[in-house]
Image (cartoon, rainbow, N blue to C red; front, side, top):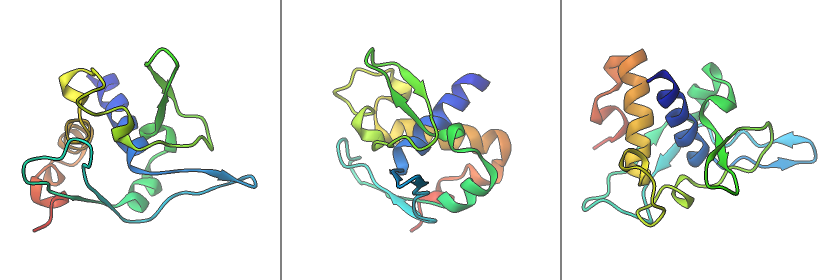
Length: 131
């Protein structure tokens, strides 16, 4: 379960942030982000507010970020790697397991599982999905 949580966390953050390496410096991405599904939008799309900066202050990049190998399997984060959007792989046409077969499912698996385990008060819908 811990391994799945770590992999899920890696997936969500990796997808949410576009990190690029330029002249030896790594772009750490915005401090605050609005996450919104575009490939497989929900019937009533509900954007989520993601405090990336607050997560960066507590976690290593590799805790959340990852990439995909030529065989389609998850590959661990390497400092400075380019991060693709989650939906590049996590969409209904990619044939992934249901738990991570869309941006929404991958994000809920990652965020809710981590929050439920570490800070249950943050596992409520309204924390991320503001009205």
